[in-house]
Image (cartoon, rainbow, N blue to C red):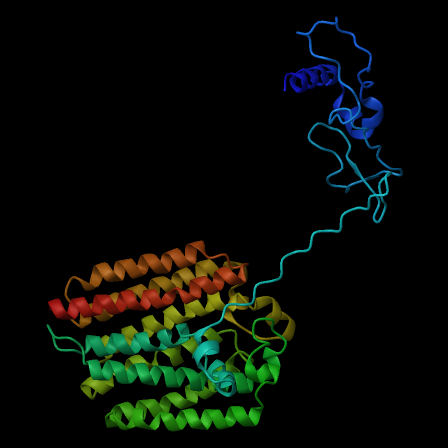
Length: 408
């Protein structure tokens, strides 16, 4: 061990002043000559013996780099010390016949995460589930919340809302959302094929035929008959009047830039139906401000949502408020957001909701302001995240109405 330590110390001393560039470019030429096998030390037992080349790790012959040498890459051919780095040409071997190691293979891509549709729904039924967007429930929440708002506001002071009616309208929201999506995909299948986000939908991709889509639409309408049967006469009339709105909405984007406002009228029709189902009449002082607020809310969030497709929409001639507002989108939707909150406050005041309603309304206002101020309209993923987060806006308004009614 003493012999090895002495050899290492002597080798380090000899290499101390060798330039770094010489070691990298010409390592074989830059190294000092190997230690002589002749002893330069006195013949003293206490002095370590000289290093011999045979069987010595430090005296192993150094390997020369092959020619020609080329830079590693244009961006990484110079290291932090200013020394140019080189590598072998592709397929070239070393001077001793060693070949360049093969490039490291990237790990296999992970399979996409499976949803509950993949795990539980039979294979033949999956396209229909996707057509009705049952696998994406956030749209159902946007339809259900205005219904829940009006049903809860129509409850007697100090009492919980009618749970049976809430469950019935939850069922109806799932159905009407599926009907609307099916109609939309039937009418827009040629447009959807040209848009990156929608080209994989069942009708646009050809997984389902238009005939199958029409048959599924009829099946969903039949499922709505039990819902309709549970309502009073005024509510049934309002449901029937909502169908032309649902069927015509997909056509609006072909004729007007205000398709998102039209969607707001359709999506909040449930507020009228819910109040009528509870009271048998319509109170304009309460319901019209709520309906206006919901329409402004949908206009704000669907404009954000439409920014996902604005590049494709411009190419194929589809209209939207995202294109209409352009770079002024945030000032426009800020104004509609303020109108939404003001009308919700007016509706709650006219309904004699107690004070707990207003802190919830303030929290909902902050959530809407956060969406508008922080959304990156040039980032489709960020637009989608803000849109999906609106289920919490609806929940805050519902919580405020519930607490305000219970306390009153």
